[in-house]
Image (cartoon, rainbow, N blue to C red; front, side):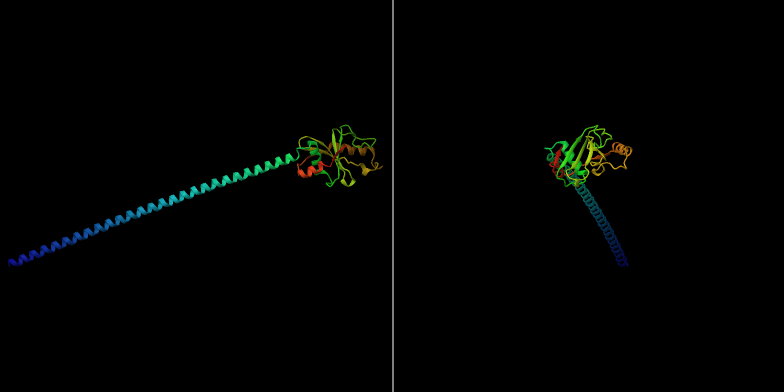
Length: 232
C-alpha cells in the first residue's frame, strides 16, 4: 500500500514537472516571436526611413538640377540678347562709317528723293535752293511767295516726274510743299483759271504742307543717289 502511494506521488510530481517545462517552452517561444516581430518592425521602419530620405534626396537633386538649367538658360538668353544688341550696334556703326565721307545735306537730298521721288532710275539728281520770298510760280504775274527757304529736287528728264519741294526741320522731318514743278503741265495758265483761283490754290499749298519723317533707308541706295547729285 505504501509503495502505491509513493508511485502515485512520483507520477504526480513528474506530471507537474512536464507541465512546467511545457509552459516555460511556450513562454520562451512567445517571447522569441515577440522579439523577432519587434526586430522586423524596426528593420521595416529603418528601410522606410531610408527610402524616404532617398526620395527626398532625389527630389532635392532634381530641384537643384532644374534650378541650374534655369540659370543656364537665362544666361544663354541674356548672352543671345547681348549678341543681338552688339550686332545691331556694329551694323549701325558700319552704316555710319559708309556715309562718313558725305555731308549731311547730301545725305538728306538723297534720302528725300529715295523716299518721295516718283522715279528712282534717274541719271541726275538736280538740287536747287530757293530762298524765302521767292514766288511759288516765277512765270506768273501774280504769285504768293515761299515763307521759308526750300529745296527743290528733280530729275533731269520729264520721265523723272514732278520732283519734290520741301523745307528741312533739322530733326529728321521735312515739310513737303505740294507745289508743281511744271505749272499747268508746262504751258501758260488756261483762261478758265482766273487770278483769284490761282491765289487761292497757292495759299492752300503754303498753309497745308505735309510733315514727313525721312527714313534712313539703305545706305547703298543713298550713296548711289548722292553720286548723281548736281547742285544748281
